Image (cartoon, rainbow, N blue to C red; front, side, top):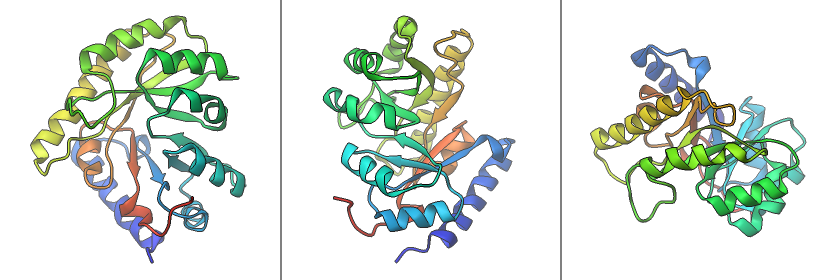
Length: 229
């Protein structure tokens, strides 16, 4: 049985150390508890420890938790979202971390009842196993979203390569930060692009040092108990 409170204390200390190393304010980093592999009960334990940003990656798991949890939390959809699932998901979440294609943008525009905060997913490492646009494609894609009234690009998201090479991981995060800075400098109303969603259980400290504003931590925080479905 995972002890969420003790895990959280350790993670918060690591976040603080990373912020000190990077000369950043810890208040600029938001911890998302990725609860996709744990029960409603474990998720409630997270909320009791005052972590109110929760991440899910499947529509079924998301809806089960939303129906069971009454607390005022922010829901982050962090998985690849099938176009046909947009209708059931988009108006239940606060952030989408996986906008990566025009067909998905079209469906969000059609189904969203309000402006949705989205991260454009970028496959910086160019791994075939990962979703997302290339660095070059992402900038053009964001420019083309200017006519979508229901989409606000608040930032970029990426996943680190599957490697133990910290220098390679760091370079991926650094490249995403460079692109985010470039897009933010355009000051486009539809794409403020001030945020960076990067860093997971194994690499969040590096991500923070390279500019992450949202880190997505699952196993290191909540462990695993059982699937929701």
